[in-house]
Image (cartoon, rainbow, N blue to C red; front, side, top):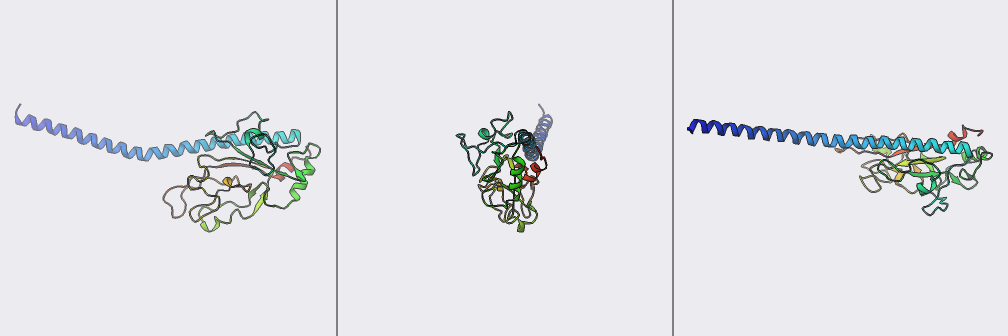
Length: 245
């Protein structure tokens, strides 16, 4: 083999290795770009499925109220009444032949108006409208199921600590907590300098409004914050609009 042929073959081999390195570089760039995108699309699809699951449960609960005049009682894991909230959804909604978990198989949170003197879990078709009148007349007091009066302005951190300062009484609520769980992904009960608070992980029975959606990039942040809880709230006034039953 002459020296010219050897150099030609070495050059050809070098070009092949260079091309391979270039392809590997492109694959690395594509992977670093596409994997987060695919992951984000996956989580958004699951959040949308959570919304559908909650919507079906909400309509079933309204249907039960119209048919019987009462909402399912809040029960604990042993099947005993839990008037202070922290309902075990599988026990509380066992009478509804629908899914009680979200797309990640986490239990959907359920809470219901069950205030003494105006208990929607103990009313009947004949008394439900009067019970609703009594409930609507009650001012909010700590310990009652309620929703935030406001929605966080994600671009104004000055509002994060106070957007839920006023609460409004509700008939019932359903929450799918999505990917983020308490104390993970920096979700917090109270608003902080880094992000709005998540009321759905608190114990005070005050929940986010359904209008809250994924927040994306917060002011001064470099990593998007995804708020993927899904909430369905039915107010006392919404049920009252169905009267007489």
